[in-house]
Amino acid sequence: MQTLVQVYFTYWHSLRDVIAKDRWLKNFKLSVSEEKKPGRPQGWSKLHTIDKEGYGAINIEWHQSTKMLICRVVTKGAGRPNVIIGDFIDYLLACHRTKIGAITIFLK
Image (spheres, rainbow, N blue to C red):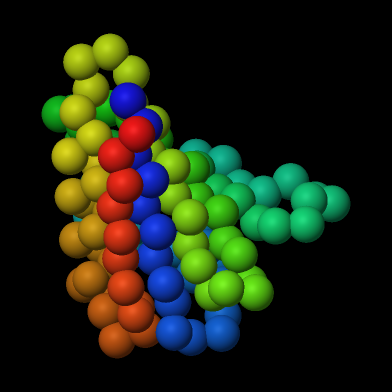
């Protein structure tokens, strides 16, 4: 199952860079497993949950022109996206609430 989470950031810095370097991620049961490759025009990162109940990954991509963070949540098998999405939204609201204009979730 795939779920799309869009986050509109009202600040001009890349939210993806901020998330990738944030030492508080582990407190929200998330870890960065991969980051952007040199030479790619847009940055991307991959987050995994470190919670035993949550399976899946969040592929995040930053679009500077729209100040939009596009997050594809991918789960396999019996994995439910609500665990990793809940941890991610909890992190965003706890650490970046004042800089977020909107969060939208789409089911695919």
